[in-house]
Image (tube, rainbow, N blue to C red; front, side, top):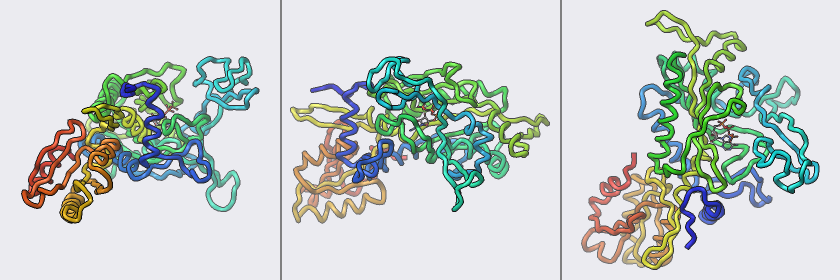
Length: 444
Ligand code: ATP
């Protein structure tokens, strides 16, 4: 059987995309109109999975710490924000056109500088011009320059402009952070690789404000912490690496950036960037708004603009990487199965309740057990088809535990709990079932 379990295997791409389509995890947006290359919809299992990824980020970054607070800022902000931040002038990618096939590419993504990656023509590419990625729109009924606004290209600026309000209202002292999850929009030149690069995506960003002389130390700390998050949620260690940005690659706001990269089926790709933003953003907003955003430290009787360390992750990219990483094809006792070995904390469905067969003697008790488990865990009830097939269907979407109700259950008041990974089956009394599932799921 083809071994597609290794990270970085190109065959994995189609397998995961097909599984996502077949099981309604992620599928093309507006498909009845032929789809839109850069837009994808998350179905029931996909929303559950992505919500779990975001919830785990929030748990790590906010709930388990006393130095980070949350924010949910508006997507459409004052256009002045994007002038101050430098995005109107500098949020660009180098665009080249092929004179032969008329396709467009990002110059920094070309494998060979003078060869068109689509038609292979040599010397047919135009010189690069800077293309601004901001999505422009108009507020209200009049479409003139005064009404122009932008969809945010990053969640970070909402945090910077609210820095003082949050710091004062929450009585935070540097070093402290503000975390935010939300949609961002970029008019990418070449969206692609499924949900890896889209024009509308969700970011999970945290801006950590600290005294300038502590910034380098916090930078290293956050690189380590963020790497640990992926590994603790089950991502293969060998499929992750750190990569320093070259000086010419740095964003306009950054003095130092390290990317956490994952071995995607098409090669290494960024999952998250940890950027040293110095006091660039607070300084820009202080100057442009006329509001002094410096922090007064009572202990040292000093006023300063905090430096910022920013771990910026993508919820869609992380979800995609978790899917690739979890995908396995196995042969067990002569039978083939596909398993998503997702960490239990992010698996979309935690428990599936299955009567051994669709039999009027079994289904009422099975439904009763389902009703009992439902408030505790994300569950599913499935009675259609042979039990083996139903186990396979659950393995394929990563359900860690299946509860099977059989003909003995009414007599011994017990059910069988089957584990996705070991495939072991254990008889558990119904009155201990919730506690047993909780122990085995480690649901936080
Ligand atoms: P790239 O170099 O891939 O264009 P970037 O360095 O511009 O990405 P950042 O500005 O650092 O990306 O954004 C932080 C994170 O947001 C990225 O690591 C990624 O996970 C996510 N992200 C950025 N752009 C996209 C996109 N077009 N589609 C999906 N996720 C994205």
